[in-house]
Length: 232
Image (cartoon, rainbow, N blue to C red; front, top):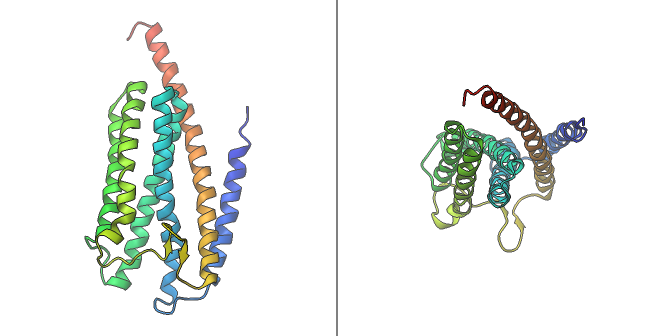
């Protein structure tokens, strides 16, 4: 059956990003950071969505361990892959923002350090998966790493509160009463970019899961063929 949903999600992703960029570039500049603050509209949504991606990966990993349905493993794998992409964008955007603000692209600040550790955890997740040929064992090991690896997320989020350093506390406070300490027009731009990333996340995960399904089907056919020919 032809997939009609994924192309529609792709179009919505493009449209929502276009709207988000419009508001991001027409919002007023920050009093202190001036035009530099526009990096914020990319940096913050992509950082938050990397958290979401890892928690979704953890949820699908749990679902796989309970049901042994490889569909959940494909979705966990796809969500983790998008999470790594978003974390890489977070690190790149943060470094570009840090250079004119702090005078350096990188410092071993607790938030930056825990973000880099999270990135390496999930890079390791893919390396270990790539070393395992048996699909069921690969999915089982991947699910365990996906669950354990996500435990770093709360530590990463709270790092700016637990270990005060050069990194500022979040402009958008999520814990307790929701607070946004900036011009409301900046809040509109931020919300538009966040919605764009949510739609984009759903699109990327769905697209990647469809591709993974086809790759696995090919692997299964080759394994069945090898078994019938007595090569395994």
